Image (cartoon, rainbow, N blue to C red; front, side):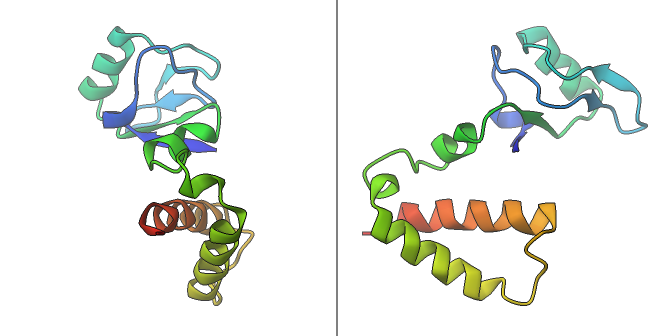
Length: 112
């Protein structure tokens, strides 16, 4: 799952799931490649985020594709630290899973 804010969407990205407006009306189905006109439509209809194919998109947005992102020891330390912060949450819940993934990626940014 790679849910991106409207500010981070770009033409050429492919939707992993359908995009609906605030009232639930379908704007674009899953599998559509975004174009500039789609981004304008999203802004017009109040869409704040979209699910984009590929997990690597968020990792690249957070800057984890650099040297720190390739260090398995630093990654293991970051994952352990974040696990401790979320110890009382349901690890199977999709939101908690995504939050933990983002926290690990951000932790990797600050790793020396």
